[in-house]
Amino acid sequence: MFLTIGEKIRQARDKYGLKQIAFESYGFSRNYISMIETEKRSLNENMLRNVYDAICELSNCHYQQDYSYTEFIKSPVEQAREWLEQHCNLQDALNQYETFNKIASDFELIEYKIKIETLLGLHYVKNDELLVANAHLLKAIGYCIQVAKNPASLYEVVGTNYITLGQYQEAISILQLSINCQEGDRGQNINRIRYYISLCYLNEGKYEKSLEWITPVLEQSEYLQPKAAAYLIKSTILKRQGRDELGRELLLELINNPFYEDYLGYAYHNLGCSFKDSGLYQQALDCLKIALPLRETVKQRSITKCLMGEVYFRIGNYEKAHSLLVEVKDIIFHKGSLEQQEATLEWGLDLYLETQDFESMLILLEDIQKLVDKEILDEFIYTKFQNRLYKRIMNDVLGQQKDLNEYRILLDAIT
Image (cartoon, rainbow, N blue to C red; front, side, top):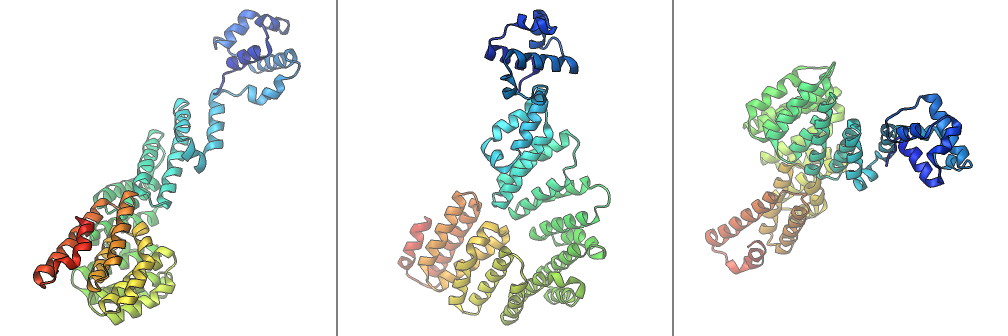
């Protein structure tokens, strides 16, 4: 695919019917041409020019259409690098992955293996295929280590992917490696990663460890974004420790601070969540309605709408709750965290059992199964949902003396 000088000369002789003796009039013996073709002799710049001109003249200038002089003198490594540079794009990465990797490996051009694995990893992150993304990104990290390139930013992406997947110990290990790789003045990066690690411990229910990681972020005042996120983490820790009022006071402190105006959407959303968990549903709705127009992305707005749907369910507005669930469930299941997915399924199940809307329940079951088949949702989520549904049905039948046949259509779907 990528020819040496000698191979190009042999190729030209074969194509144009040139014998080695033909080069003698240009100062190259048959033996010398043979040694060039077998890579036993190299050529200096003047000799390269003379050989090229000889081939052009002997081929009646047709060879110039095959190779310019610049292309003729390129080494295989230079040709490979040029090919890799031209094909280092997403489309070629998807279609010619094996070819690209083989060329990069054969010529030890590791920097292109880093580029292509990173490119594919970030592509799969955007497509919410996080396990596939991490497989490529971890390869990129391995190649970075081979060539002493800092993989700190790649570690961070892998770690945040693990958080979304609910694999918190893996996330913590990877994120700590990212901290260890930080160089120079990277205070903002370190504080951001501390937030992620704190979030992992929070989701594992290890509140003291979560506080341990988030406290340094709260104590610094140079970087606003991680500090605002730290307020949200600490308020959630306080809520889960049963200190709801203190948690809400912290959120109000954030809301009333003019320096954190850009984070009001997060603050009001979390405040609404706190009120909801305390059973203060009207206050929760008031906060969530303020939060909704402040949320910046479709994912963020969907998370807030989903929480509003749960509140509407709790206050008995089943029609509004159903409408919001149908609107946002696909985004939550594709882009939400594990906790958000499970919480949505939990109140969705409660809603459809409460309203005896078994048709919608079957649609929800079918949606989950399709996402599991596509490896977008983990199978244990579907199994957990089935088990919870079965237990609820048995509780209704045994505890409330309901007729088992009323639930036959659901039982047939999960057994």
